[in-house]
Image 1 (cartoon, rainbow, N blue to C red):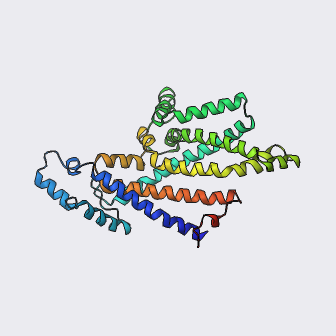
Image 2 (cartoon, rainbow, N blue to C red):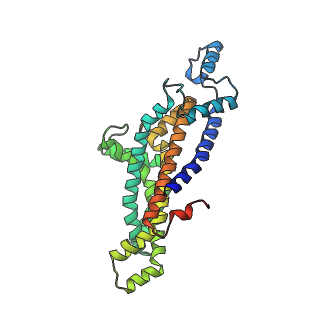
Image 3 (cartoon, helix red, strand yellow):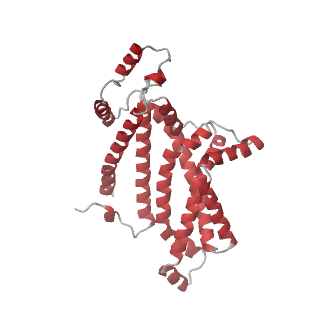
Length: 311
């Protein structure tokens, strides 16, 4: 297992490097930050001094290799707008995003698995069609619209929950539900398909022939063998939610990495943008690695040595 983890870490290095290169070029192409961060009446000499202080007057390759050298040492550079290390700025916001994503994934999983199993068990009935209709609706509704509807119902019409900010569990309810809705719909559909495929296998017929009934068939046999594709979707989409939570965070003014990166882009704060994207990329890689390891535990047919590189 340790060799597999080491192999995955080595695979992640070029991916993270590619992310830094692409983001570096894109944010540099967005314009001169001195026109955003300095007063509009600043002189050309003041702008030149600002660019020189942050090394923005050097050629792009020189800037990138200098930045990469600092990045290897764990130094993301100095934030242009916060006037403090960019890594610390992002690190303070990361727990808020991870908490939001973790709650959303948990809610989606806890609700979607029973719904998908129920739809598979009652295939072709009105209950199955209702669950799948809700799933299709969930995948069709934009996150910002869902957030607005929840605000209208639970904060305006029924003043039960706070509209924005982060402080108590009540602040977490609407953002997590908004973020969970799309994943819940996807997981319900995937669970139904995986369960139907598993229920059609020979080992299920053998178990029934041996007298296994009810929960034993669905939980012990079918669900366990249907878990790998479900876990894969949870890992992929859970990782995507970390980077894609910006819409939900913006709607509810949730102080996470998404809103921080958006604000940094508007201010051309290059170090914060790159630090945020790199940390999100690392978080996605770690989540996918954990899911791969959980799949091995859930399905004994999968072996780590099957994924290891040839000797």
